[in-house]
Length: 262
Image (cartoon, rainbow, N blue to C red; front, side, top):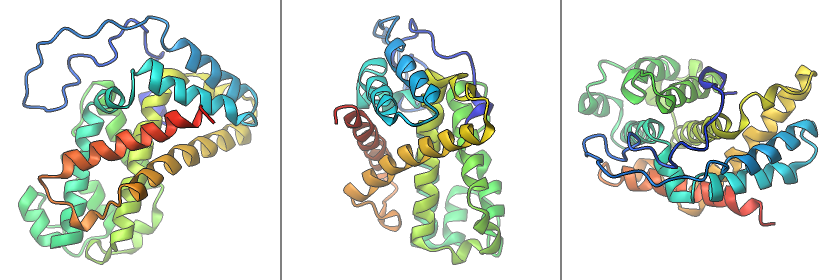
């Protein structure tokens, strides 16, 4: 559950959007970060801890935690998207590749992005081979989130071993994208407000149940966002990828924020 990127949690004095989380890798950002409330993580952390302590029975605390996290801790949906940093850019590269394979085919897409000879390989092997392109390895938290989320996505779809990449259907590419984006949001959330709390229950089965519940909750938000935005991955033009990815993330965060209002 994102444990590979686990740390001691975010210090409230960290700016909501640090200067190094620039939305475009090739743009300079010399602006002074907006000062943040040092206690902005306190309420969502408290509600998330209460949710875990209830062994997942009190979902209202989960809804409140995520809503407060988006609105208060991150300063709204746009900041939430920007704060994803490298994971956001990795999603853009992933959608560009998957949209290309779905629309133009594996050979043309491989040549376009310089991915090597991928024809005739299993989807699982292809996803592993393009990992360094999609998620370059690095030392920052957001880079770790991108890479571990990608690996978790591959591991969650064992059926990828049994299908050639050129035989994958559009809905399978879309499912991979949904799971990856869900994992990114979840790992970012856990690194910000959920560190260590997920390990509170002594019962391993209870921990797994809470993990599954959280997975389903965030995946539902991402899936609903994609449906509401009517995203068809094979029809995504490369010039539109960044805007589409940002819209999906922003809509998903909006859905998560609204859950605490119910």
